[in-house]
Image 1 (tube, rainbow, N blue to C red):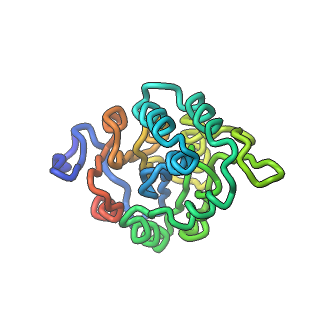
Image 2: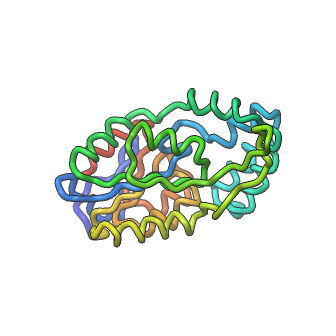
Image 3: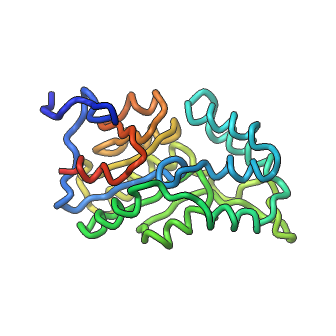
Length: 233
């Protein structure tokens, strides 16, 4: 039983919440990307440019709710993107909206010697840009393949970053950095984030689906990631 305050209108600690990490101690924060660090689903935006936006967005919504298998849904959605030119991805990347409060949260974490990690079922095209802007220690994401004409082939290259990969990455880095689990925070919004959230010492459901909220220590229902600085002790 804890003595944390109950959830408020914009979210808060859940009934079974564990104590949040100490900002003053070494720690690690692991983030999802789409609809967490950025205020968009990259694959849906690419699909809209390819004329199959509604079809892909519907599959994305079902996958994030946990109604269908994430890996299979990802392959299905990526196949519909075949033929999209890399210039389209460049344009989307350059205009992708960073979630309010993300820059403040990330810079403050780094000032306090925290490791920051981005683990996404999204794509390197966008994750690598966020890594450049915000100096993540580790970035893990999916790789889109292009043909010789700089158009998407509709396939993914290498290992698919799924729910298990997210959780395994968090667990491996916790050990690698010599951190206690209590100093590891994970932030995500979709069903494929659940194993990662369960592997962390403190789980944050951000503007999240119901299944995600069930496993969280804290639910943030405001699009302002800097609010998490009020949560860290």
